[in-house]
Amino acid sequence: MRWVSAAVVTAVVFGLLDAIWLGRIGRPIYTDRLGELLAPRVDMTAALLFYAIYVLGITYLVTVPALERDSPLSAAVGGAVLGLVAYATWNLTNLAVLRGFPASIVPIDMAWGAVATAVTALVTVLVVRALPWVSS
Image 1: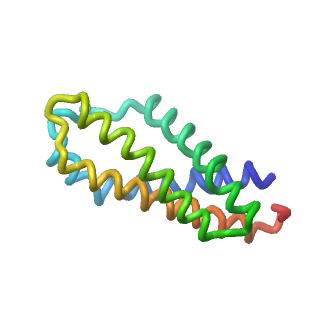
Image 2 (image 1 turned 90 degrees about the horizontal axis):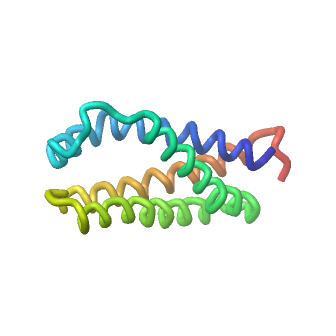
């Protein structure tokens, strides 16, 4: 039950954070810097596949181990590291192989990945620890 609860909470928290970021805060940054590289519409299949894989990764690699150690701090640190690595993979690969990929977006997006994943993992651990149906 702990694993399922952690995955569900992770999906909700990360989904909300990323919706706020992509819908409000980050949108003008990405539109300005990525311009013509942006698709006219989001490919929802690809987006949902990313979210499913990333949520499972956060859950397996960060939140469940942090819950087992009863360590919100390890959730935050592990989330920051995972987010930095995941978003660096996307950004630095694009910078290396795509013509016209703006270097100015790289630190912004990598920082977002680290912060969003750290907050998601931390909140998930705190929420799951408080759920009455999840045994320790």
